[in-house]
Image 1 (tube, rainbow, N blue to C red):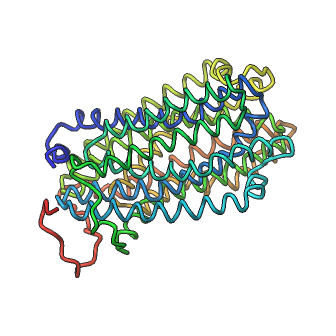
Image 2 (image 1 turned 30 degrees about the vertical axis):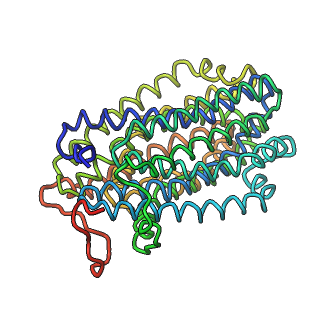
Image 3 (image 1 turned 135 degrees about the vertical axis):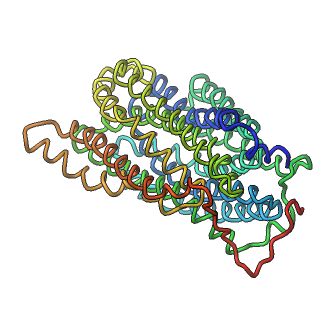
Amino acid sequence: MDKIQELETRPIGHLLWQYALPAVITQVVASIYNIVDRVFLGQYVGALAIAGLAITMPVMNIIHALGSLVGVGASSRMSIVLGRKDIRWAEKILGNSMLLTFFFGFVFVTGGYLFMDDILEMFGASGDTIGYAREYMQIVLPGMFLTTVTFNLTGLIRASGYPTKSMWIMAGGAILNIFLDALFISVFGWGIAGAAWATTLSMASTAVVAVLHFVDSKSFIRFHRHAWKPKLYIFRNILLIGLSPFLMNFAASFVVALLNRQLIRYGGDLAVGAYGIVNTYGAFLVMFILGLCQGMQPIAGYNYGAGHNHRLRQVFALTMKVSLIVGTLGALLAMVVPGLILRAFTDSDTLIGIGIPAMRYLNVMMPVIAFTITNSQFFQSIDKPWISITTSLSRQVLFLIPLMFVIPALAVRSGGDGLTGVWVTCTVCDVLGAVLAAALLWSQRKVFQPGYVAPERRPRKEAGPKPGED
């Protein structure tokens, strides 16, 4: 317990470094799963294999969304209740989060196998790419269930005071994935099936290690019999907070499906492949920013629960500053050397030619994307789910979906390029989303003021245990 109590005593800058660095490395490492697959497929299989893998990304995002629904909600709630020194409640969050993970994982994996072709076609698979996409998904689906387990447990490991251990669990899986990709694709010649097996086996290894942490007697938050008893209020609290990243990832899946259809309409299959590469670079930057925010989450949640609002303000301001620096550097790199970035994934001159303007349009507003993400993640950390949901969904649902039909059509009607219209739409929506995020942040400024008290979020009839009770 001494380890977690440091969150209310040590300097904010030191804490953010201590928690954010492992979280950033974890997020960057997690993105390596997709990056490594694309690099090996681009170099050893071909452009259509990359396009086929890009088709599967919306499905993968939905599964990640399920992991976020439970994992982010559970870790945020655990940080808040640990701020109240309530160990027993934290253990109930651990057990109930696993029950939710098993339920959602079973439902989605089963549905994925039953309706696989329909789902892939809905997300933009063509006759040339569906074979690659199907071969990959048939192997990787069970492994994606294990990803939801890992996502949930590594978040709880970090929230309970072990940020470095959480990092090493994910890093070990990514290193294994790189080794297996090289073995299965370049040595054995298994193609896209090799990428799927490498990903699945890596996910399985991380899930096992994460489970062992909460079995270990040295962990002060562990699996106990009482923790597995279903509690509706815990389910509700987890799901309400987790709803923001879930809806964001879920919406992103359908937005990618919409983008893929528009890209095929205006640029063909190779435009989808180019977007897949550009999106990988953008996702890498977003993963870095999300890592910073995940480092902020236990610090913000704990101090919010403990009532230390001045420390809450400090950690938010510092996280925002670093996020904006990362976003600015990422945008500059994409603007100055887009071709160099693209060439790391493919040697196809056609794919690179399509990707260069996409790289610039989709990343030029990365600083404002960083601003929006940090706002959303902060409100998620302090149990303000509806503010977080509105912030995170504004760009993708409120702005991007309608404008994706309007701007490309206007570009074509005015004699321009519809494909460029697709890229411009993304840039415009980044700006609009940031404006709304700023307005919502201003409306919630009271949470930083002295005397603001966080609500408890459990039934009054359930008596709370004494602080530190096991």
